[in-house]
Length: 338
Image (tube, rainbow, N blue to C red):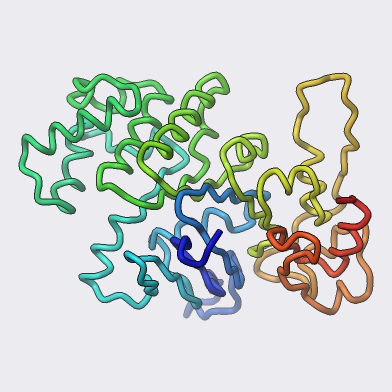
């Protein structure tokens, strides 16, 4: 991946939610949902975000689409070769930029207004972000529905007339109605039956290839993330602990947390044996994260340096595309083998 191919670059993004107490609601602390994350998203790729519930991946996704404003950091976006900070744009520029980044939410049942037809849900954003007339908008909606294997006449129906899988495909089509470049997908298939998940995922991959889309794909299901992603970032307590190409991460997972996560993935061959790694203890509170490495309270390899010093997310010497935030990364990589 080259510098010119970077579509979005996150630099030291932090998002804290204040904790208040007392009659006067004084701030007594903060939940560090996203704590100093730096990532690059390349044009045309799918970047997967995985981690336990509460690790901050959805919060990070909402920051990218500006549903939440980060407390600090910058989000450099590639506007035709010019990198500009999304957080420093004026109101008019920010409005135009929102068209380029869209989001598909987790629950297809609450993502559509039950009082509006599909046509009405699509028509408003198209009308706001383009100069198409009524007939052109209708034709575009029909093409979008056909792109996700739905009949164009479905645009006159209401959300309750569709199944979960159909609703999610409608939500994907709606996200595409303003011709975005980047789509943040927040658990897009977790609310669907397994038999429907594959259809929706294949549809998303087809659309990505046809339209040149870039995805940030947020999910719990590691097998789904492996299928969809080119690169994967593993998050824990608001930070990225490991970042690597999908194949590299699944073949040579270095961080102990990634190792534990992947040990829980079911394997199709019941005769295959895999060591199940059970993490001891609970995830620490993001309002009071541990000093040093965030994972050291549950890590079997923890030593004195882990308790005192926070490791940086750095590339491995033997694999510059594989980043690990662990003081023992090089030793563990040598143990795993090349």
